[in-house]
Length: 82
Image (cartoon, rainbow, N blue to C red; front, side):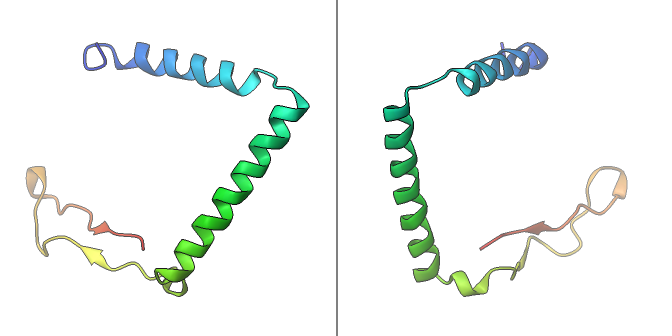
C-alpha cells in the first residue's frame, strides 16, 4: 500500500507522530524518561569520542568518479559522515 499510495502513508504517519507528541505523561514518567535520555546522550557522546569524534566535519567523498546519471547528467557525489 505504501508504494501505491505514499501520500496516505505520510498522512497516517504524521497523524500518529502528532498524537504521540501531544499525549501528556505524568511528571514521574517524564522525569524517568528525561533521566534515561540523558544517560543515552552521555553514552553516545562517549562512544563518539572513543571512535574519533575529533574528526567531525571531515567528510570523505564516496562513489565512482565520472559516474553518469540519466540523460548524461553527472550524479551528485555521495558523502559519508563520520
